[in-house]
Amino acid sequence: MLGRLREILLGNWKNKGVALIFASTIWYVAYQSELREESLKVRVKLNPAREDRVLVDSLVRLGENETAPFTGDLTLFVTGTRKEIDKFKEILPGILQIELKAMTEEGFQSGVHRFTSEDLSFLGFTLAQVARFEPEQVEFHIDDLKEKMEKVVLEVPPRLGQVTETQLATPSEVKLVGPGSLLESANVVAKVEFPLSQSEFKGKVSIRVDPPTLEGYDLTSLIRVEGPKEVEATVRMAVKESVFDNKSVRLRFLLPPVKFPIEIQFTERTIPLLFKGPEREIERLKQDIQKPDFFVAVPVLEAGLSSEKEYGFTFTEQDLILKGFSDEIEISQHPDRVNQGPWSCTIRPVQQAKE
Image 1 (cartoon, rainbow, N blue to C red):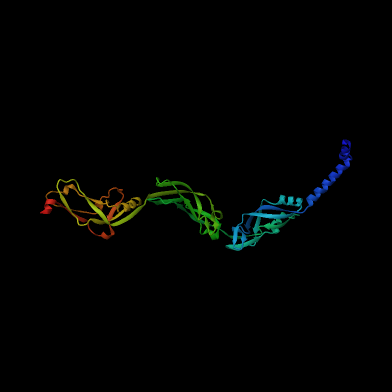
Image 2 (spheres, rainbow, N blue to C red):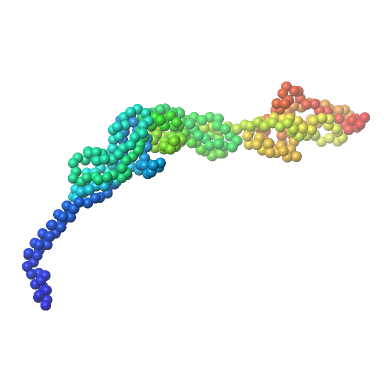
């Protein structure tokens, strides 16, 4: 039994080996000769025909009223034998450069490029053929490549109670290069940030194109800054002043200690005043002046007081005392009292007043 099986498997082995090799060769040739289709992805770069032109955008149409940015990925559906397709893969570049030959006019232009085998003509003759492309075409806009010098604007975030006194950028201007239709609307901004406890900053800050987008276009990628991407910034802050006027400020007389009764003769219980000072202090003053215990004080000199005779004196806005606030707040004449003289006041001993 075993001998019979050995004879079947190994008998006439030379002829059987030749037949096996011959059959394998026929299979391999048939396998390689079989026509097939394979999809290959390649990166595409669209280039204007002239160096003084620039691609603004490229779009793929998804529907009648819908488009999406062209990612740069192009799918080739290649037909041929395995050998022909493998050869095609070897000569296909990593990035396919496509020149927009027809777009050579001046100014902003719209166009459509349909992908064809002509885009691959530089590869020379190949047996493998591209049956179709996906996407089939792209829509695009190109424009003149322009340049301009643009002033660097230092951007200091708002700081409560402070105002920018000095701001200087070195260099003060930089060169921008990009599509002419977008370049005129582009600015150069450098944001300067430093602690509120500091009133001065000096150092390098990065610059950026602003606004980052315009009419749907990404300016940060379309417009480039030639030269340094940083500037030396100098910023000095000052106290921000504010003005506040009130027509009815309560008034009190600040008297020294006296050993006899007196009477103050002053007809007005409130007076109009104008306040000027740091914004923070003025904002607090606006709140406090509404409180019933708020007042400004008139200082009275002890030397003028007497138990035997009346004491008359005058005072102006500059004589008033504002307690609980910074000395930086100035009290001045209200617009309603322009060109009017000082106020007059009389202090009399009570006994003399009765007589």
